[in-house]
Image (tube, rainbow over all chains, first blue to last red; front, side):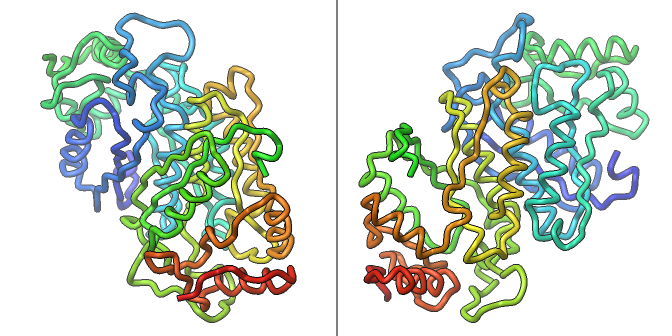
Length: 203
Length: 203
């Protein structure tokens, strides 16, 4: 979406101690396919903090729907991701930061909500030299209000190869999906609702 | 200060690609001396972003006073530090985060100002599961309005061993200070103004 709006894209992925590296491999593939200007993988050790099914091997990934905020919530994760993006943005002189959070299908995560994005945008303005000197930071979250089906349809229109992407919380090293976690179920339901063949490779 | 207010202290240092590790060694010593409950060093690779004299070996540390925000500014650094602290705080169930920023002697850094601290506190509330569920996060910055002399006097009163601390931006591996960077000059002036012998070891 950023590229179709003619932004030069500096893509950022974060290796934060997540259960698998398959999503980082997928990010690399997608960044190359969509010709990002640059793709960086930054490392932060959130596994050392623990407290989430995504970073703590002692906490299981839920495979049945949970009430409330799920065990896959990673404390302060998107705050940290956006901080890294903000630092890089300031260094390269960019004011526009895009993040793929989504609040509709899955509103359990506090840091996937519009209120969070708006608040971080205010912080970015105050936290940075560029902001003090007049740059206007904008945090874009173009997927935030879309359903999974709408995201899939928009992606197909823009030429996204969904067979190259990974959503599963516990994919295997080759990106094979478990089909049972929340993320797999929502993705599969999205393809069904979009009336589109699901190219996901299940293991 | 946190300990003297009877907080159980989980101390956090960040290895972010700064020029030297001496300040991390010093943090380890001080955490032990002051009996922190735990001391963690988390790693984030900001050197990969560059853009600062503190993380980019191609940018020199200024040794004469500079106009405006100095080259030692690290883009989004305190935002990132507080994000890490927030994540850890949420995992251990803490609501109080202390950070040693100081706005008076040195107001050049945007993320050392009270406005920044206040804004991050608002973000913490919105960004976290704990905040949504009613925890009230508080970001404490007890040094923020103090002069260096006042900080030194307060520290001495609390038994801080300043010979164990490092302020220099380019200390050597043993913590030997350069005496010429902004941080060294402000520290030395602080001891002079506090009428206290300066225990700093200059190389």
